[in-house]
Image 1 (tube, helix red, strand yellow):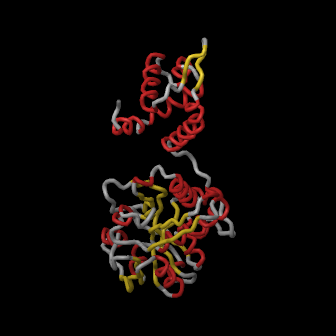
Image 2: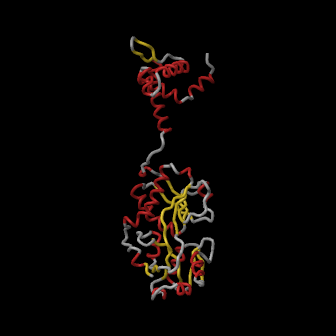
Image 3: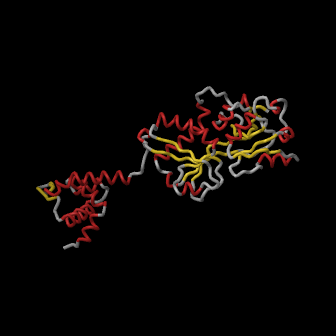
Length: 331
């Protein structure tokens, strides 16, 4: 007589449940073996094991066929339901129905990236996933822990500080332009490095830095600029440039590329974007997430929505009548 522990261990074998379902459905060792792609001998051994575990013959011979016992009849539907639940549990998650999502996504981004993303993401959510809400948090100096600890779903921006396991995907590459108000002296005539250096500047830096790549490029020409103010975000710097004679930096699309939503705020403020006559490193905007979210269907929808807003919005055309970037980006 088997011990209770032995019976418990046998009952925890999921393969037994699958075999039981096949045997009770097919009522034939041979057909059950073919269904599970095993040999009739192996299926006979499994049936013997099931008989010991359940202490019931389950299937008995009646002429050339096998018929279920009353216990087997009682177990038939339950065994089938268990196997369906096992299949659902162990099947890789496929696509989700965005309309059924009820979730708040937390995104960490700069003020400019958040302002550029929010309209497009909310528009997509309104049509595809009306149960989705968006929370945008300010950038941190070190964003990796927020992703690792689950405080944010995505970091979007210039990704330069991530943990080794963090997944990073580059989305779009931009260049920097000089943003000035309409009527600013730099809008008259050709913009030269000397004229750009002589102008008053406002910088955007969450770390409070006065210098950046533009200063390095000017130094190569023996020039330096005066930064009269450092503000924590690009939107504040653009707002200041829109009402004063200061220059701010604005990310915009590369030549020949469709307009970037990261330039929309500058356009809305009435800024003129001027080509900077110096070689500056490109700005790559990417998104980073913790690998535990890689296979999550809801997170996949979020990443796809971000890609669409940042990569495809210019190609598809955005509503609101915003003009293309090239007519208002001038040397």
